[in-house]
Length: 184
Image (tube, rainbow, N blue to C red; front, side):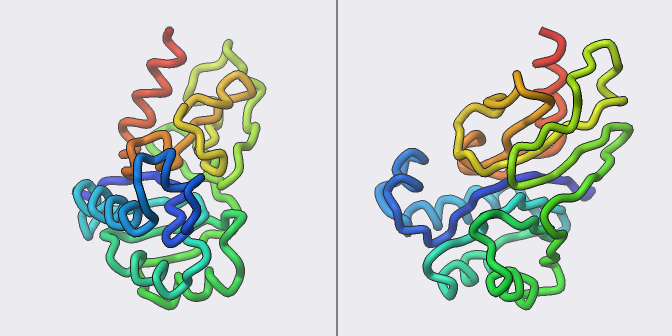
């Protein structure tokens, strides 16, 4: 059975301590290998991953080699470090890697999700409406370790690796986290 995962901000080959040290790594190489290992541990070849941007930075050749090693069909949205040149390199790797632009809306079950790199207000936080009638933003970008960092601004859930132990998060977990947060 195909599972759906969401992630963001892999930052493969971004050799800056402010990226890898808060994630618990001593080097960018250690970070790259841990992300690949964690990803392939949960994502099977038949699964789908929505990657919400910032795939790699600095060493394009090394970043592409990391991307090649990942399981699943990968739908990439544009992040602030995903140049047109890099995006072309991503989609040239495999027919299992597609680019969806800057944002996209998907429905999973009866719930609408707006996927984007940047946190985006998609709702007036209409607490009187059932969750299924509201659109939830799934995003990355801020490198927060708090998946509900922007929750007071709107229905915004952070999917960056930093908030999920350097591992893509299954859609079911995201939805359970959100329902639990709303029902508190």
